[in-house]
Image (tube, rainbow, N blue to C red; front, side):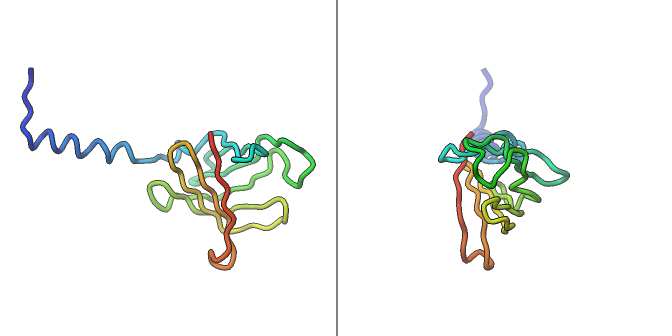
Amino acid sequence: MVKLSTGVLGLMLAAVPFGATQVRAEDVQGVWTRDDGAVKVEFSACGDALCGAVSWLKSAKGAAKVGQRVFFDMVRSDQITWVGKAFNPDDGRTYSGKMVLSGKKLKTSGCVMGGLICKTVVWVR
């Protein structure tokens, strides 16, 4: 049996939380369902950024269409946050966008007026 000194064991334990909290862009990639179940978006790499396109709609009656890109140029701003642009098919406008990954939930926001007015949606895998 190998004995570890208290100092070495402390360093090993200190490294575990750091490694467990690191989030890679790949962790966002895949299909996410909006919390109301009305739409699914698939996030994938597009160049050096992430993009999200509508992959499924509960109803085809709205302005959104399958295959339509609604998130683009999303680049990492910190360990769990990406910033870029969000397109709203309902009004045809593009907003400054932000995504925050928290476990199995992804919170996206589209903002105007320098972030004074934002709409946030929660997505689940």
